[in-house]
Image (cartoon, rainbow, N blue to C red; front, side, top):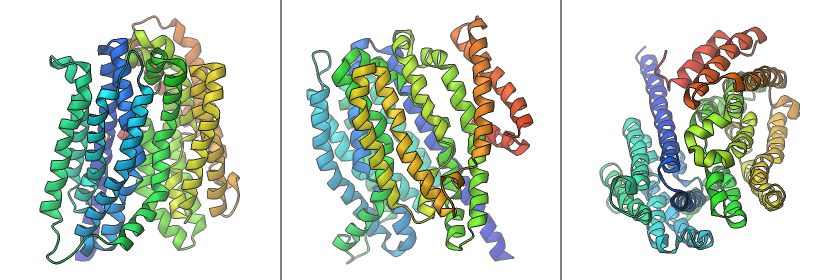
Length: 499
């Protein structure tokens, strides 16, 4: 009984730790969104162009240099806990090595983004310092989780997000120029280095006589991290390619509007991520046991829950795009940002499953590299001609369309793992029923929207509540929603605060 109770207690702790960390990631994502919203509302046109350009170079560099290495801490410490001290140093060393070429690329990007209004050349040394500090210290949070300090890790993760926001808003609260932002990012970034060193000193001291530098182990960690890391990197870089294209081809003013349009609502993207993270272990065990029937049943069940949550949120964002952009980006950006925002949001209609965890669970992790390169290549091929023909709208269209070939390939491989074809990859009838319900209600909402004569915020609230009530009723009648789905939606929307 003791062993059973201990196992149950461990599962409860694991679930609680996972919920805390997902909540912290969600809050950090929301804070990053808030950072952009503050900048859009508070800075002038040219000032925001500078902020957007600095953040774009920073985000691109961190995405390129990460390579999935921070997550390697979990796998290798779990496999060989006695080598934990060496592993965390090896991961940081690999990230430092990656930071050097990435810093050079960041400098090139900063020069290319500079023009008569926005000069990033003076910011290059400070951005380089940010990259060289942040990349090697990225594993700090994962090191704490691996050691059993999920709560502390979550607080640290959110704390880093607060510091980043503080740097961006510094010119609004202190008598400093807008060019102080990269300086503040570098200075505040030293706290990451301090946290990382303290974690190494307190939790992962090197045993006497043991050496951490091991070429074979370094190579093993690198090759393990690349498949999933490539997918994560491309997922972050893909929506940035069009920003560079718009800046270089259409100029700074259009670039600022386009950046406003590219804001991502963290809650929507968190749902498939959270489900995939929680269920991956069960997928692995079922596939390893050869129980494909149960694997398909569980996969369909989780996809249906994701469909029930993601589709209505995506359609609501598309229909209420004018109100959302006006609130988030201010009136000065609304005219140029609304349609691209609505186009971007269309991509959410296919994010109804955590595809990566299923590919990994069915021993198809290398496919993540292929699909990542396919997305990147398709976007690179489409972005320039689409921008030439359709302007900023074309850049957004190219980003959305770039996901289609990789999605189809992914579905075919997941279907094959299920013993069939792409037809077996998803519960297509349920997906179709969900689209009919959500899009149908969206059309009604679009027709009603002009007649709701209220202020922007109040109109968005009324439209959202009306859509939610209609979806709960029609969704239950059409079999898209169950009682448990309604309860689960409530928990997601309240970050687990509601039972």
